[in-house]
Image (cartoon, rainbow, N blue to C red; front, side):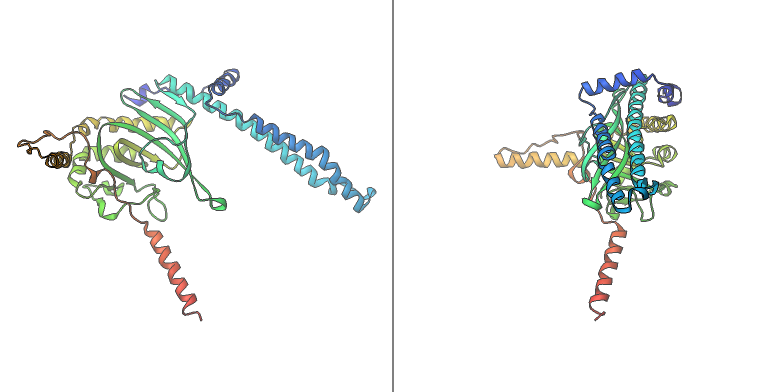
Amino acid sequence: MNAQTRLDTAPLTEPVDRAQVRAFTKELRQQGKLSSNVAGIIVFAVVGVVFFFIIGPVFLGVISSVVGRNSLSLVAAAPLLVFAAVIVVIVLGLIRGVGGAGVRRFRLDRFARANGMTWEPGFAKPQLPGMIFSLGGDRKNSDLLRSTSPRFIEVANYTYETGSGKSRQTHRWGYVALKLETPLPHIVLDAVGNNGLFGSNLPVTFGRDQRLSLEGDFDQHFALYCPEGYERDALYLFTPDVMARFVDNAAALDVEIIDDWLFLYAKRDLSTLDPATWQWLFTTIDAIDEKFAQWARWRDDRLAAEVAASRNAGTAASGAPAPSVPLLTPPPAGVAAQGRRLKRGFPVWTVVVGVAVVGWWILTTVFGR
């Protein structure tokens, strides 16, 4: 697929018929895919009107009894007028926001249809194995576009929350999910270019003993992590031409290979109305998709030994003689247990802050007496 010639981005920017947008929004609500925000806007407006016409006069009456009717001026009424203006601005903003969201949904749905994909508003708790999908609470994706041919591709925005009360924080990501033809070892490419002041922007940290340095300037763009003992397998998967494709097309994205999935992550929306973003994403997908056939041929020699050992143990327990020939040749598709998940580590900055806090406590409590 050549994204530059086959991707139709016109629906993202061309004028829309407001009547069609309203009909599309109504259809989504009838299908149960979209909740209504109208009730909230009406309640907010009613509260504002009640305050303005009922509580407001009482407020002015109290002021007039204190300062005298003749002394009542615009200064006394100013707080009420300001509140009324705020109510009007908020209600208009909510109405405009709802309308803008409707246009966005309509455009993305038409864009998906024009390019052989489907659009969905989103789902709670998406069942995906990537690192960002098991963290925090209130997990949900939005503006989800899917393609099933020639392979399964999903592009969406994603949020989850951590903390509680005043420390509650919403984490926002965009992701691309591609289904692979065979399970592969758990490998993470941490893009260097999007790291922050305290290092990696990834939400989890992996043990440094799993870091694999590759040839050329690849390390300047990505930090590659693979399970211990799978270094040769990583080199088989990330040959120089594969590395070059990731550097040229995906250097701004973090990459995770887990089970039979490949994920591209960004700490911003990827499902957008920006044609350039979609061109870039599909150019990246095209570039790496061409190498998936090579990856499909990978097999884990450890898995054959693991399965054979399990079967031999079962045979021994039953008293039957052990087979004299290998049971599984060639190795089956899959990954042995030790290669399925990377081991987690601790962020360096967390350790530094922890040591600093303990040191400060010792200085203030022990030597500060």
